[in-house]
Image (tube, rainbow, N blue to C red; front, side, top):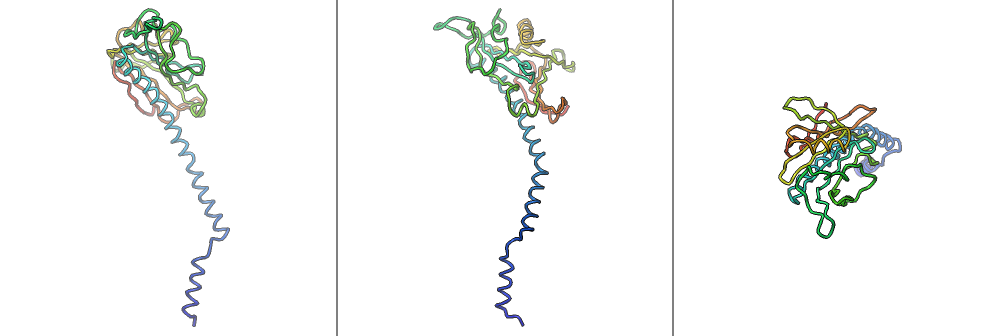
Length: 248
């Protein structure tokens, strides 16, 4: 008959026994397999979140222009184009009167002054300092978002599609290479579109207050085809920009 003390010692040895090498290898393989299966979903979630963040940055540039216009008494112009790489860029400028320091330059409330945005039209060359006064003292560069810069946006092939509809509700939205959106301190919005920034600004200057819809649609791409959710920065009439998500 086995003594109780010996039985307790046997149980203690079994309880304290370590894993064998084979058992450890099986556990490691199972963990690795689970992690491997989860990686694609993690990457997809990260990429989708990054695309949303780029759209949010576009929206914030437009919100910034509206709030700065009201706060500074200066009209603010946002120029949306494909940029040097075609992925998309938005630039924000404030209107000034061209007076030389120290008496100027001073804020200008109008979006449509003759030659007001001449030096704001050319594309940026590389990094551009914030609050940079343009050469003619008639505009100041405020901020920008450039999807053509290197980073995860290139890996995901994030691209911006610009569309505009200036007719009644239900009219078709038409693609355009460039959009110019100008907001006065009173909140009046003028919008123009065209083949490039110069054409868009020229149309904006000649237009009546905007009552249509303009959108910057930001989406990831694979092999030239859009994937995942489409993020839409919507400018409707003179309202604040909205951010919407959908699947085309």
